[in-house]
Length: 475
Ligand code: ACM
Figure 1: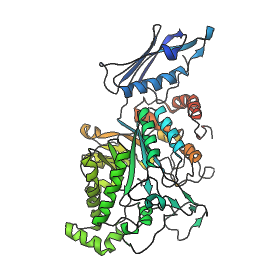
Figure 2: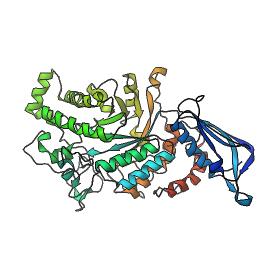
Figure 3: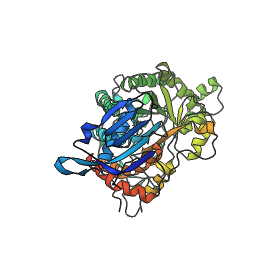
């Protein structure tokens, strides 16, 4: 049996006994898009006649190629410069349409070159969505021409807290080191194009109406205390400073979103919606007046109203709103795609409410959680999600009818970067947990964990070849 290590494993892989010898397997392979396969299906047949890659679409042909290149890693040198390639038949298609990863580039700015490498590693795992968390309290990372201070002011903080944040803490230590950075529109267009060439859609997130302290620091009139000058947030956690619900703020956000839509041509735009405290709205005369005008009974309901006001920019251009699962509680549009993060059960609730759902539950696929003993691991936010737990992740929550199950459109792993200062730390937390995640998102057959690890060992060399850091398996 040849040593085949394909990650994520194809749904069906049959290895023939013999071996096929060819002069140059890479150029001898025939690649075709055919109409007798579904759009997401591909086949690879390696026989004595050669290698044939066929697929139902260009995207699926790209997955075929990625798989085939991994198969070629099992080739062995033969005489006269030829290689001996295992003869196989692969029939494959992803189980889920959304196979994503989120990178938080707000808490710590990540250089463009690294984001491109992340695209490479996402493509290596036949995933198709890269969600960029571009804005948060601690930094605004996307150039907006109409409002230059978003990046002139909002992309920089004078220093960051050190140590682990808890909400009970009254005082913090700081590192005294300025941190910041942002992507120009050209940077982002380059990332989008690079990703598109690899079959990956970039989903931008502008997190609102909470997690907006960096924007309020740049334009105090967006906040509920416009007479106070806030700074870009230096500590982690949830800021009480949220957008106000004035008409001018709605217009501001719409203008921002129009520029964002110009940069990102994909069908999905993420408008956050998580962790938005309503305290300032309860205490603000203007917000209370807005609440009364709208006949709302609770200040928290202003979030749904605000989101609907700004989301119309997306609808006008045929784009689809994506939001965190809190949105389900804020009377959001029914066609919003919901990312279930607080628990798998939140996904169940969203699916029952009729939403398409991307499963990204923190208990299974939050890669900012520890993956080993906190005593010996780098500082992390908490939790415990070792590699085998990711491998065991069940994408579809229990308790759904067939119709509701069909609304689980996929899965996503999230990398929040409060405790990751740069590419090296992100690589360590992401890899190889991403590899385990990709098996579940693709729908690879669930094999014993040891079998997965035996494929993962050689697969780590592919990750190394991309120049990415990872956590060694035997650590
Ligand atoms: C989240 O983790 N606040 C979506």
